[in-house]
Amino acid sequence: MNDRTELLAEPPALPGRWTVCAMLFVATSINYMDRQVIAILKPVLAQSTIHLAPLLTGWPTVERSLSMTEVQYGNIVGAFQIAYALGVIFAGRLVDRLGCRKGYPIVTGVWSLAAMGHALVNSVFGFGVARVFLGLGESGNFPAAIKATAEWFPPRERSLATGIFNSGACVGAILAPAVVPWVAWHFGWRAAFLTTGLFSASWIVWWSLKYRTPKESMEWSRGVVIVPPPGPRPAWWKLLGYRQTWGFALGKFLTDPVWWFFLFWLPGYFSSRFNLNLSHLGPPLIVIYCLSTVGSVCGGWLPRGYERLGMGLKPARLAAMLTCACLVVPIGFAGGLHSEWGAVALLSLGASAHQGWSANIFTTVPDMFPHEYVGTVVSFGQVAGALGGAIFAAVAGHILQFTHSYVPLFLYSASAYLVALVILRTLAPGLKRAMPQG
Image (spheres, rainbow, N blue to C red):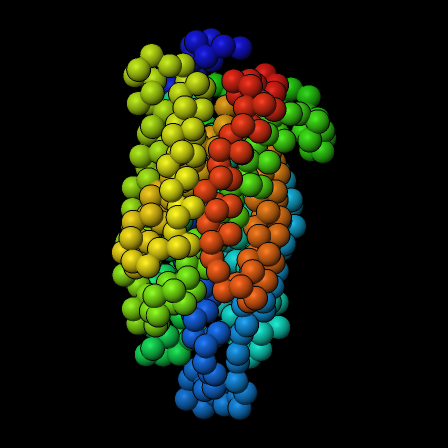
């Protein structure tokens, strides 16, 4: 089916879809805020001893101290990402089976409890256990969000909608350095975990009261959503037989680790290279993630800009991905910079380009697969990305522990996107559909 035929069959835009996008944006912001807390506190955990004073008056004082090495921190990050990979296998299927309205709050509830559970930790091993449960819960966010986008938005708007809600990842990363140091200084590090965990619990109430599927929420006086009868559904594992699945998954495997690197190691990078302490880490990180928010939205809009130059929808999507991949390349120089704000500029460009790339690679799934398979295929990509991130975390921990150099990590980051795009275009030329819609 060519682009023109698909556009003729495109369903009408649904009222209320941007409200759904707003809810997805908030969920993604909270998701990244929860996972970022430990990265913000990492310089403190790594460089000093913290006595675990009681959070509230009357609680027992734990006479124990924490100290975290680079290898231990890498192992904790790796534990999160392995759990994320395992969890997303089930999360995508859960969301496809239960639907977004029921499935999304379940996975959000798991990560909310896990985020607040960090406040009970009193050892490095305890952080690892807490991160495992956080990874299991957070794994469901993107399969659910992409599925909701595929249900509510026509193909032309999906990358923009994805770019908008995906920018929540940047907003969460902005809010974390703005909120976490203040809470930690005034109320202790455990209060920081409790604060962010409460946000996700509040979101569950909002989603459960507000969200409906398009068929349930459509104003029938203004039109009817036509839902074709379901065709035969192959077993989920048969989706692995499609080259398109592997093109998407390998693209995530190579590029997701770069974003994990930004989230989990940039505070340590600025701390070690530019001697920034906890009270001074906020401004560089906030600038980087503010600009990456712009990159996510602009990257989501970019295919429409290429369409105005005469490209079809799918060639425009690939052109946008190529643009983003090229814009990441300069961060290869970040490891050798001596200017703090020069590093901020390069990393802002790289993080912005990553977010634009992410908005478009996610949208390739509904481009290639019917919406009833979107959650499952996205989960395959999330598994691959999390496994890639776990491998990267283990390697990065050892590189930093023994060489104290970020150069190899930035060189990998600079090249990963172009390699991923070549693989995607080889396995899924032209983003050809794997199976007919419906």
